[in-house]
Image 1 (cartoon, rainbow, N blue to C red):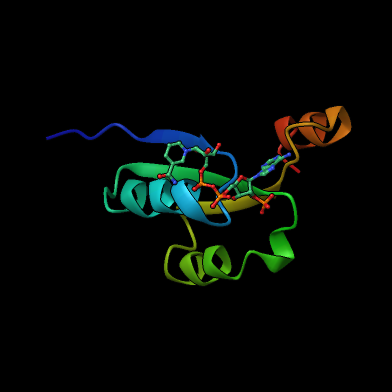
Image 2 (image 1 turned 180 degrees about the horizontal axis):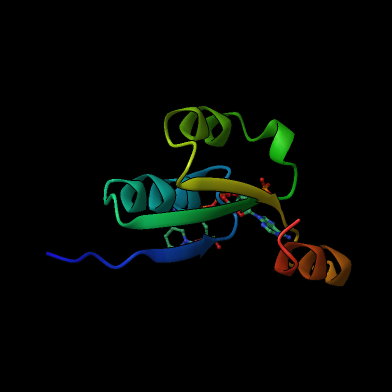
Length: 77
Ligand SMILES: NC(=O)c1ccc[n+]([C@@H]2O[C@H](COP(=O)([O-])OP(=O)(O)OC[C@H]3O[C@@H](n4cnc5c(N)ncnc54)[C@H](OP(=O)(O)O)[C@@H]3O)[C@@H](O)[C@H]2O)c1
């Protein structure tokens, strides 16, 4: 049986609907999640989730109203 990996980008994932989407996606082992927040160091719930999903959850900084932030996120840094 083969499995396909899907990579998801979830913006605004520090709380609310965003972090719930991240949690639901991580239930499937074939999903990789890139979760973004404006201040990743303050996204304590996301940081706790990453500790349990080190290879499948990546946290990046993103403010969707800031062009420089968008470009930096798209570059993967
Ligand atoms: N909750 C509901 O039942 C519900 C129902 C229908 C529609 N909605 C709508 O769905 C949206 C999310 O709802 P929510 O309850 O999850 O809201 P929330 O708890 O206030 O969360 C908002 C999220 O948006 C992020 N965010 C805010 N400004 C941002 C920006 N400039 N760039 C990137 N991320 C930004 C915040 O992340 P940081 O602050 O960490 O960056 C936070 O993670 C809202 O527009 C709401 O009106 C909600």
